[in-house]
Amino acid sequence: MPRWVLLLALLSLSSSCSHCSPSPSEASRTQRSSDAIFTNNYRKLLRQLSARQLLLDIMSQKQRNENREQAEKAQLGHKGDNVCTDQKLTTPNNRLLTLLQKHRNSQG
Image 1 (tube, helix red, strand yellow):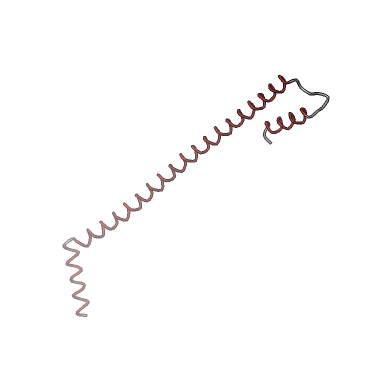
Image 2 (image 1 turned 45 degrees about the vertical axis):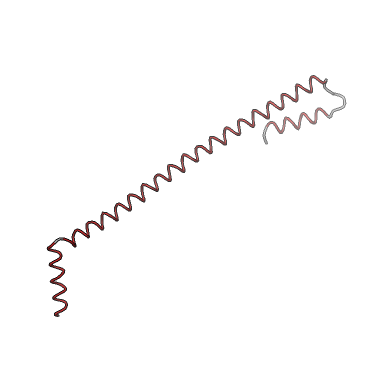
C-alpha cells in the first residue's frame, strides 16, 4: 500500500480525535504536507511509467527492425536462388541438353 494512503488514513483518524484537536494553522500545515507527499509520489509514479513506456517503445522498434532485416535477407536469398537457376537454364549448353532430352523422350 502506498505510503501516502497510510499517511492520509492516520491523519484522518488523528483529526477525528476529540481530545487532540489541532489548531487551524497545524491543520493547514498537515494538509499541505500530505498534499506534497501525494504529489511527489504521483510524479515519481508518472516518471516510472513514462520510462517504462519509452523502454518498451525502443525494444519493440528494435524487434521490428530485426524482423524487417530477416525478411529482407530471406527475400534476397530466394531471389538469388532463382537467378542462379535461371542462369543455368539460359546458358546455350543447357538449352541444347534440354532440347536433346526432349527429342530422345519423344522418340523413345
